[in-house]
Length: 227
Image 1 (cartoon, one colour):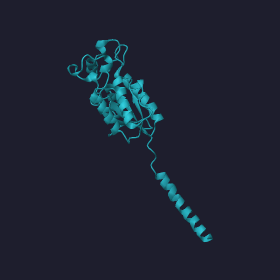
Image 2: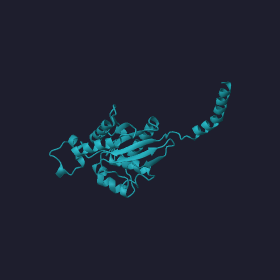
Image 3: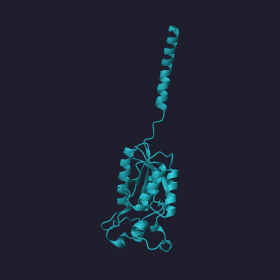
Image 4: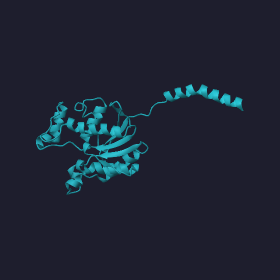
């Protein structure tokens, strides 16, 4: 009995260094935050006027079409098993409806979190300077003016970036979904790809109801990921 005890002790002593080495060699959990950047699903306001029910109020135009609702549900279903801990949404109705369908499919009891950091760009008081055509012309030429009382592309990016950095601290090693708008999504995707957000804007502008994954590491490095 004593001899068996001695042998077991010797075996434990011999195995201990190898166990320690194996523990050291084991990869640490990835502390990166996985972010599923989602442009809101199909909304009435993006449907040509001739194809819309008439008349439509501003609130109705900001809502999802029936196809938009169905597509949002499919996005949610596709994210099952991805470890999404929270869904954040722009305050816009079309974004909240998209986020609600995703959160429901994922079974998140909390539902979507309305997050002002992911709202669309503030257009300001000068309608000409803030018009979509004027802004796109500026961005194509590499310029990023700030409309009076509004936001530049960099302004919108910085508020979204700062929020994601804060969420990385909260959800390190996990995943979240962010439902936002084309302009904000394009800047986040361009930055993750290592591009200047103005120069890379049109190359990374997403279609409605599309999902792109980025990762934000503990070192602050952003990178794109396949989804």
